[in-house]
Image (spheres, rainbow, N blue to C red):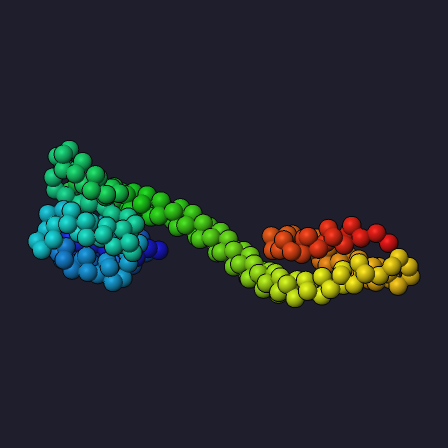
Length: 231
């Protein structure tokens, strides 16, 4: 069952609530004032808090305000207890962030109904949170893999760009030599080798679309120049 914190300065009321909830199988912890209750809540993170409004040290509104400032305790279901049934008092409790409000004296059925309703809602929220958390983990894993692959691609692209830059002088020399040769078997052989080399590099470029972004102008011009050489 649930871990419930009861903050109540009246001994009899506090003990009665604890007994009722303990009989339902809940793990109940009590605090005799708002200060102690707020401290315990932040240290142990109960699943539900039942808190009196009028108390020494810290009153119920101050306890709730304190807990709302802490992300770890802000979402804990909070039920106010009060002897006052004034509508403005109830409105103040609800607008301050309370989940429910019980006026004293309350019956066992009223208390358990409020507790069970809040715990059921918390369970739904927890399931939703866990579901979204799992989805976030899956998404993060996919992002990590994409980033890892991106790093590998960037390394490949960087190496390929370096290789292209190194090949430009060699290709230029080959083209110059070809231009000096007369048409014939030797020229045709050199031209065929050059075209096959460029063709292989073009195939590699087509396999990695990102390579088009690093195809430097000098190399692009060389490809057109080679294509224009007639056998």
